[in-house]
Length: 322
Ligand code: TXA
Ligand code: MG
Image: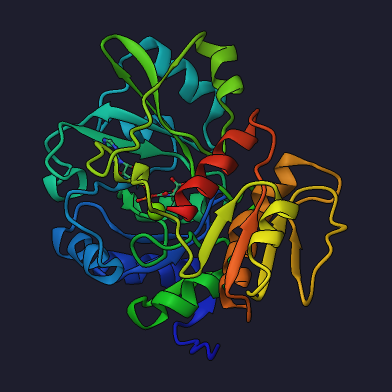
């Protein structure tokens, strides 16, 4: 596949800040995935996020802030359980749904009374956020519905012509989007599984409720059934069985652990030979992209254990299969 690299990429925080304050889009590194950032208080700039991603307006954006203190100006972090989570996990792969204040444009929240807030754990982006002193609205830097970018080149290959600058923070250290948590019916609820494991959250606030919608009309579109989806057909199951069913196809495989498969011209991506879920999370989106760009006709995947980060990995695989 021919990849046209067009956006300037570098580590110049002053340039990124200047471009953002002038209303441009800048791709920013975080520990989870790369974000497509705009000044959240500038509606025209926010609008251009939706245009660049071809994202429907009913899909609200996460705002990124540098510190817990800085949030107070834009949202109410008043629930004591969410306060505990903020203290325990920020900066980190956690997004909290908080009642919003007037100054956050309705365009950011798709008209919802709550705003999604996150303090990302990446030095360059934290420095940038402190410098500009406005929240950055940033969805993942990929066309709507496609696999999230975990390297600057991923963002560049698909959205490079629409981004003023890419702040290069290297490969993402977590590799899965943030876990989204909020309070509904006075219960702490998980709305998206992600880079912070459910078990870690429950250690701090006790039992939570999973409210992950699978319908085609979800409340949070990160929950859309067909999302994070490569263009090739993807099957999940026992790989040896799936190989037998796909004999006539060129096959790419995403496996976890053992990889002694029999077949012709198999292209094998091992998420983690040592069965480490953290390593699998880091590799997942990179391998989905490589499998999608490979000569294979189909991509065969196996599930990982459904604990810790494994839950979010399996969730993304299911959605990638559509
Ligand atoms: O790790 C991440 O969260 C990355 C990095 C860049 O921070 N961002 C990310 O953004 O994954 P995005 O736009 O791809 O996914 C954000 C999800 C969407 O599914 C959206 O529907 C949900 O967050 N969301 C945002 N605001 C919400 C709100 N007020 N209520 C419910 N869901 C919301
Ligand atoms: Mg996304």
